[in-house]
Image (cartoon, rainbow, N blue to C red):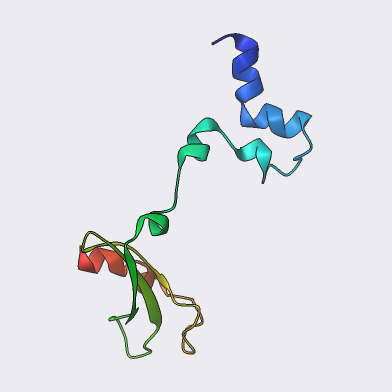
Length: 97
């Protein structure tokens, strides 16, 4: 790879010379980020659950693939937590695995 190809592929250079001055769009993209996909896209099913840590009862969405938990997120439809989880609830995948 030549020097100019490397510089042209550098996100900071694209941010300074392109139309994405804040670096939140096309300047931040790379070949590597284009290949990434969310763990939730690969899930076979989504199961609704309740966080096990305290008595508040925050709603969770548990993403399952091949009968294994791949991601746990807050449930935006939950009237208790409205999609938010505390740090312990957000880390509850570690409890399962």
